[in-house]
Length: 601
Image (tube, rainbow, N blue to C red):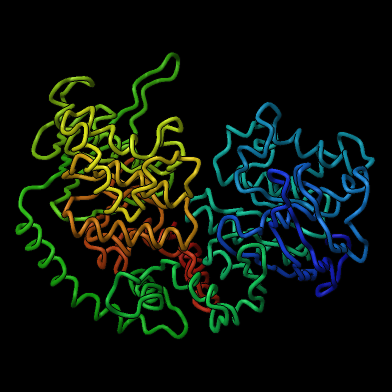
């Protein structure tokens, strides 16, 4: 099955002088300016840049999917045929048939009231004059092609009955069902865990080679770009500032923005004193006994074993110096209570964990592993079913939800949430959001409260004038800084940060992480940092706990976990992390394939 019988290297898309403007308050505001690029069959062009750079707007313009307040000029030729200026019915025939889109969030892109099979069949029959039975046969073939474990079951399932990775596979099946010449993948792996992301990237790579489609990959994840892209176009403020092969852009970027973008990308090994991207891969090879070409795994294993005892001894001595733990879990089990016909669900079992003053402990694992559940229990938002959970030396496992004792303990705990937009009250100015915890706790009011708000704005490096702004007037990074300021308002001894940077662009994420590190060192609070991004945790954490299916399967110092993982699950997590370097990512991919082939799954 080859997209439109294309020959590898054949020109599929030619974009010349493409400009996109939006009408805002009787003025035309440019979103994309004079873009020029092309994509050939069997090739992946990655368009990268921060939010607002124009990468998605320009790509949606190709298909006439922009709102009515937009205007588009220039030339867009698909297989030699001009698309711009075509009437709606002609463009509608192109969508799905010749050009398909894989969206960022499959749950919102798929219709929740129709089965997966119905949605794929509908797409096929919309563009092809075939019977329902023929369309079903083709749909099942597509679900097999995207390697869903049980195509028949997936065909009959509704979107909510599939996991995130399965939904993404189903949407890819729907997108490819009419053999498109061009596939536009808009942040196709952003919402996925690192292991699921690796599977989807493998799938897209194999499908691209099998179907010979041209692919436009829109993303801000440079690891994903290194894994898939043949060529890269870097966008900033609506303009392509640099374009070239993946090797050129990663190894010798010319534009200062590209250089800054690559420098901001967190990567495994950044927190270590030694060279690490190669070492992390080599360490995995050594730890698993997997042979990798050009990696002296045996020598590395010997060196790592010699250091392990010293690392463990140093960690133990440091823990004693830090004093009593701020957060301590001993044999903790956490359940979500029964709701109606839904039975009680035990999300965490037998958790052992300590966080000491001034220490950052990274809690990592896939979605559903129980890491956010532990974070919520630490601030008293979930009851403890078994075991002991102590916060600042106080046992909270038996306390009632609205008890005075629990309210007192919560004053010692701050929390930073994943989505800064939904965690701030849209009706309150920024100053009131930051000052509200102090006012409610009775620690400050009047002029003293205003002074404390200003101090907190200074600490998170926001202008004091922002106190009168509303959340919608701030960028994502600025809103997350407000969230950090609010979490710090009661001078907590423990900070629980739940995926605080996952919704941010890479350069904004780097700035927020730098700020977080500086504040943690200055104020000395203990931190439980919940994330699935191992590169971020490598930058921040002293100690790492790895969770799988409600249990902590491995924990130790950052170097122990990242450089000499013992558990197969940890090894698989590390092997799945994409590296922002095409050559090293190829090596990492080879290692992952060897690990999976050897049964380390």
